[in-house]
Image (cartoon, rainbow, N blue to C red; front, side, top):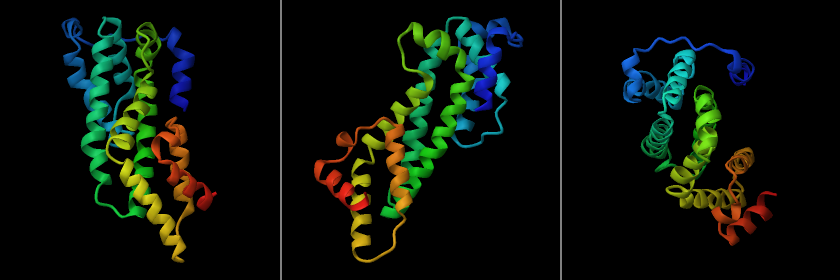
Length: 212
């Protein structure tokens, strides 16, 4: 991404313009509520062009510089988890097998793009606070939360049922979109999920024999 590349090339020499009241940096709350939280929420909701990335980067830089890295990391974790639990999960329930797989892939594509942008605005935290605390990077945190909140916690059975129903439909002579299955398999790879942990052995064998 060009934004990432630009940050990589310029961060070491960039001068962060101070525009916050000195009193604001005694706590993360003012910068979080005024700038970072609404900006990250917009990115998670797919409004990629609305946030002011320079403002968000400066806010995150200032928060970490003044020793609020832990609070920023934890608030970011909580905000992402709330988004997944309250918005993404809701989109997936009550769908047919085909609708479920398509919607899951769409949700993942949008989320992955959002996390890439969130990683950019929190890059200073990623480079300075995260390694010192032996934490996962912001992007890896996003992957972990998607695995826990979406795949492992609420949709494992939906996923299994959707695959079995899709195979049964083609056996009945119906046309199915195999690209969706391939896309889902790629998503699992991106999420570093061992399919043996996600699908039972019989389902793994059936999918391998049927689709591949």
